[in-house]
Amino acid sequence: MNHHFATRLHAAIRLKKTPALVGLDPRFDWLPDEVVTSARRNHSDPQAITAAAFEEFCIRIIDVVAPLVPAVKPQAAFFEEYGPDGCLALARVMRYARAQGLIVIADAKRGDIGTTAEAYARAYLAGADPQAAPWSADALTVNPYLGSDTLEPFVKVANERGAGVYVLVKTSNPGAATFQDRLSGGQTLYRRVADVVERLSASSADADGYGCVGAVVGATYPAELVELRAAMPHVPLLIPGYGSQGGTAADVAGGFDSRGLGALVNNSRGINFAYRSGPFAAEFGPAKWEAAVEAATKQMIVDLATQTTAGALSVRL
View 1 (cartoon, rainbow, N blue to C red):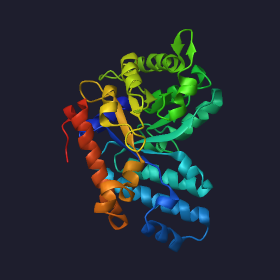
View 2: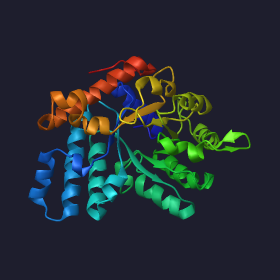
View 3: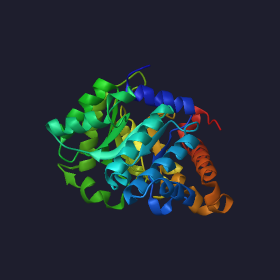
View 4: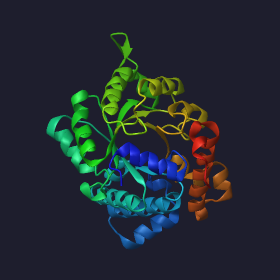
């Protein structure tokens, strides 16, 4: 097996013929009743109940989407909110996803310097060997606000282990411009971060031309996405904001190269809780929530194939 993160990522994308990424964002009040009932049957402590429900819910989603998509992205905060039980559930969910052949991106947005950053990196970044780190992630989201020395320990461990790092560059939230669009020396802060990310990734590029250092660029800023794709030609992108946050397949089209590679597009709530809203609620409802997950995932795959160069991968359903 090739060790390089981008090589492994693009092999998974080619295998599944889609860049669709399913985020795992469990929310207790939104879970199907059957999942909550099962957790309450086996646990009495409130945190243990929630953690068990999250674990079952995410594992069942993984069972549905593993044949369809190349990767999943568990959001660590939703698990960490419930303490040690939640953290153990997160670890088990990540290991289960790896066992199903999925690329796992831990969305934990860690960021620090020196030995602290290296400790975060060694805790999360398992890379090519799922047993190499306690959290067993292929990749991790990283906050670069402390400066370039925030990134260096993460990149070092990523190179050692065949892992990936996704640096926050231009995020999808409405308030992103408050800091990211600020000008310094005639250049926006996000472009300064992008320049550092491109330099780091170019130095580790694989045969497809992509390195192990990626960037988070939101679908809600399509013009900036086009700009940043051009500015970071060696950087794999993680694109949040599709679906529930308002981003469309047309908005994310600028993130791909001509082969349909170079980006993953995330959809969390729109898939996790498809049974709660829109046509999927009417067709499936709570009793068939897993069927709604499958239908929403397939709809996204077709949407990306139709509206972006991901169609070059040849959609398989």
